Length: 288
Image 1 (cartoon, rainbow, N blue to C red):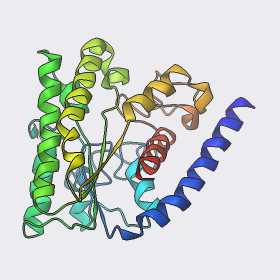
Image 2 (spheres, rainbow, N blue to C red; image 1 turned 180 degrees about the vertical axis):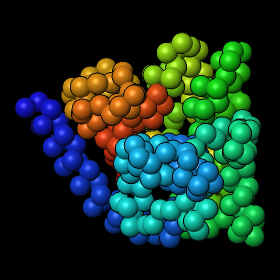
Image 3 (tube, helix red, strand yellow; image 1 turned 90 degrees about the vertical axis):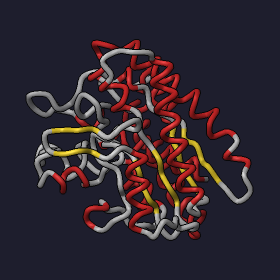
């Protein structure tokens, strides 16, 4: 009964925020997204001809078992969301880092700043001032790190995200949604190096807050922050309150778990569709 009430409560909140955000966002004429697999709606899938992520068991083009948070957010704003390689406005690539491009056997994955550069190059160096720009990333930098200084890595990630915002702002962008980084140390993939991953996440968020603090006071510039870090912490601390019965073991291992709707992680790094819905609700709340 507690789980059912929790789910119904969040569904009710989502519907209320949906109605409010559509009214609020009437001025947005597009939503552009730059980030990693938490935001990719099909670019890596297209680039690898459907090999990554493999569907099934993944939802086509998504690193989850269903639509992801930026799709829910775009829908609540009445805007389309499609991968840039399919002519859409989502430039995020699964596997993308912030600090450097990622070289793989299948090719090079553009970093978040490179994604911004690609968008600008395709739009004559101009950014639409009436669009919403989502910039996210850093988890892969942390999980891919084999060692080093967590504080230094956090500063490098924060600098890359702040520089991406600066590139867009100088090109004409005015409205941004920039989440804090969810704790990479909570991901099952970080089990062997959890303390480093958490320390790097905390450092990233600290430095990003500092770097973006002045930007928020610029005339005509609106930077909405959404605290994914705090949200995940609340879910981890009180999982049943939010409708989760499993917050540690991935749903997808050698087989799909019996109850993905109450599981936080779909695989070693990514939330389930239910987990993504919480990120979407937090993002909608930030815009309102």
